[in-house]
Amino acid sequence: DAGALWDVHAHLLGTGDSGSGCSVHPAMNQWWKPVDFLRRHAILNAACVPTDAPSIDRAYVERLLAHTADFPTGARWLLFAFEQAHDDKGAPDADASTVHVPDQYAARIASEHVQRFGWVASIHPYADDALPRLEDAVAQGALAIKWLPSAMNIDLRDARCRPFYDRLAASRLPLVVHCGEEM
Image (cartoon, rainbow, N blue to C red):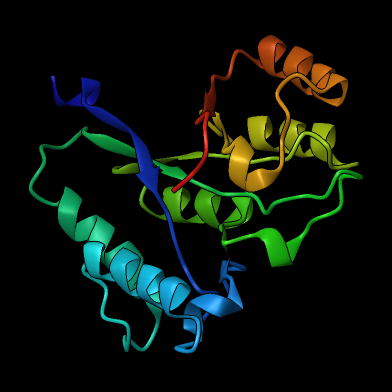
């Protein structure tokens, strides 16, 4: 049953060159910051996206679609949005964010290719608008929520997470969490 074949952890990535709202930290484009520069190159190389593609956003999605083409009809991949890091007050912290893939972009790509993709939202629980964004994600068909606490500055024990946990439990969406340091 090909409909039972779901890859539940597929990363979506972009640079924002198509108006996606995606971003990568500026250091990843600066050759004088070799570790970050090489990390960007390695990520794009692993995705088989040329670093000089006219649109990294489009090339990345085209590559994902090419990977799925040989699978039988019904097989699907869940595309992950990825929220920015936030400071302790709940404000987005672009300088501490390596990559950002907005929920709206993940939802749009999944809706354009519904035969292959579903989507996973990423909402920082400290943000003032976390609960309304969660409501929107549920209404738009998100199939889970993704957090990477070490990269997003989330303390899973923080009391500010409790309302988010409660609403998430009521929605019955799973929370995908990577614990430990991201290397």
